[in-house]
Length: 157
Image 1 (spheres, helix red, strand yellow):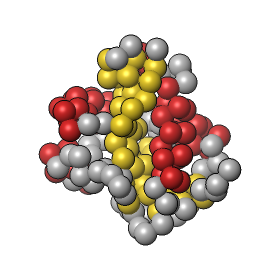
Image 2 (image 1 turned 60 degrees about the vertical axis):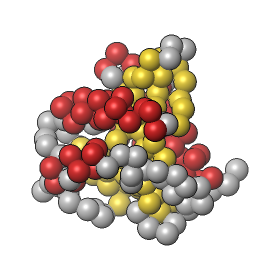
Image 3 (image 1 turned 45 degrees about the horizontal axis):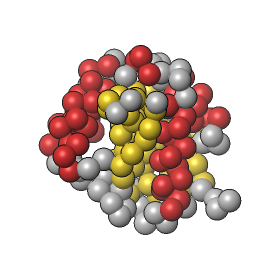
């Protein structure tokens, strides 16, 4: 059974392990995002009340992560969504994204943004678009156009 829960202090080593899996799965290095420093500083920048780190469990085993952090007063940035390959295609990614969106709204954000790699994340990009995300100009490094940037305006109800 798939469940999504907020990470706890004692989950940080599991979160780090999943995020290192995520980084290794990418066709590019995350050095431009200061990934190693970010992982070392967990749970920041994803700590409540302005941030959130979620864990996806399958029968009480951690199999994925996702987070958001403040990007501005009313804008959250969804980051580090990752599911182990065996979990993909089972609805966990959509449930994780929906949970992050709902929790960003409840944290007081009016918009969420994210970026994705055009060439390797086509399924994720399709999911983002299905949830109403629209492409926007780059708001960070774009690896010479290899990344695509999205925003979703949040509404109550």
